Structure formats: structure tokens, C-alpha cells
Image (tube, rainbow, N blue to C red; front, side, top):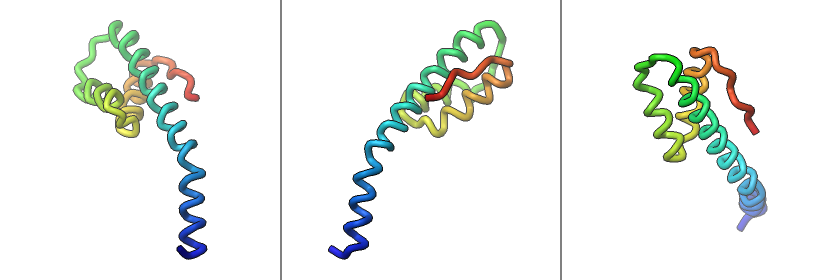
Length: 85
């Protein structure tokens, strides 16, 4: 194995804990957004089909697709976004 390859492997291994932590943080944030949306949306009538899809994507672990949709929906409702870790 070349020095460059060894360095690449070492860097990849060093980054893994941070990646897992970021995924956990994103999942928690997605869940928080969903909770706020459910509590806020009950006060408003909405028929945006993208919201249930975003919630399902969050539940399936696709936070990159779910978070922006839920954030925008909450902004549109004038709701305060939860803190992001």
C-alpha cells in the first residue's frame, strides 16, 4: 500500500465518528422539526403534499431530503425552528 493510500485510509477512519455523530444529530433535528410541524400545522390548514414525504424521508434516515422541506414549511407558518445541535 502506498503512503498516499495509507494516509487516505487513516483519514477515512478518523472521520467516521464525526460522520456518525452528524447523522445522529441530523436525525434528532429532523425529529424535532417534525414535532414542531405537527404541533404548529394543527393550527393551520395545509395541503402541501411535500410535508408527509419529508416526514417519511426523515423517518427513513434521508435527513438531507427531509430537513430543508420541513424547515421551509415551518418558516412559511411563521413557526420558530428548533435549535440544531
